[in-house]
Image (cartoon, rainbow, N blue to C red; front, side):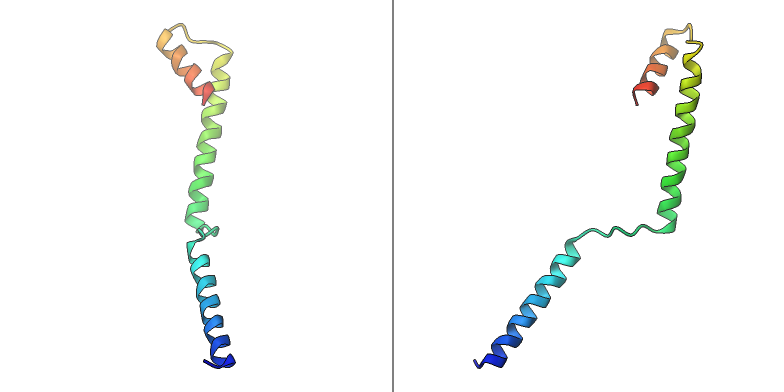
Length: 75
């Protein structure tokens, strides 16, 4: 094997290794639909948090509702 052939083989192996490592990395690009879904979930979380904080001012008399309120506050 001459030097040119060896260099070509090395280049092929290196480019194959680079392609394989890039294929294993997860994509960080999200689709617009995924970004909208994330925004919708965040808005729902904010809404639930605001409702829960409003309920703290007048705690419910029912023990089940108190436990539910405590669970929402913890989450």
